[in-house]
Image 1 (cartoon, rainbow, N blue to C red):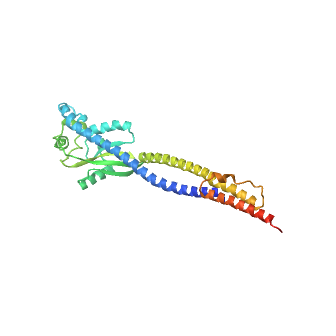
Image 2 (cartoon, rainbow, N blue to C red; image 1 turned 30 degrees about the horizontal axis):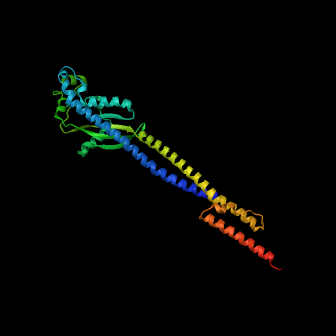
Image 3 (tube, rainbow, N blue to C red; image 1 turned 60 degrees about the vertical axis):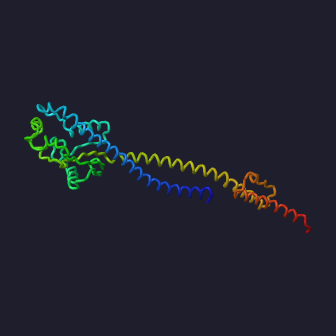
Length: 296
């Protein structure tokens, strides 16, 4: 087996092991990084929804209070405003969705489905939980979600949600007397949810991973070409030339040329070998002359 072939087989084996190990580690790191990035964006959307709720409650609702005596304006409801604003934002970022899931909502669109109800029940049971991050299976695949409890911290909310008699008549006329009542101060009534398909972070991680692996392969290939050229120039070619010359000398070919590359080498092992061969050839030539000159 040729020296170049041996070297390339070893290099290919090292490259394959290194590529597999690096690929496995980097894919996990990139996936976690992508998930963290998406989670950070989801939390940003959650904070935006919270800010919209606070703004609506402190500034919009008081401005509409007089009009609410004659007609119910949902724009005065913090949950409605947050859902509408995040719904507009979802048109720009369609992978993200926001919902204020409630066990007993005034607006039917906010009613919690089964898994959301379980999540709210978990918040009620834990009491002190401020945020929960999880994954769940959906018809379109795995989904990553961030959830925070909706707690009745402001007694002003109970004007619309304590009893039917205390609620504004226009609101009761619009949504009916069956839903959205019986809430109590300090009670957890629902959960804010931001969801994003797992396909989003996984696609980002896969794209980054493929780019990294392609660049790594190109780098390895460039190193392999460079090493092969160096090996050929400074090892294989001189050794091959020296081997051919040694073969001619061993056959008694006195016309074999001198090893011209010997003077071009420095102090490396090939240079030492070349100089040793040159000395051996000179010594052999002198010995042959002495034998030829000696009397029979």
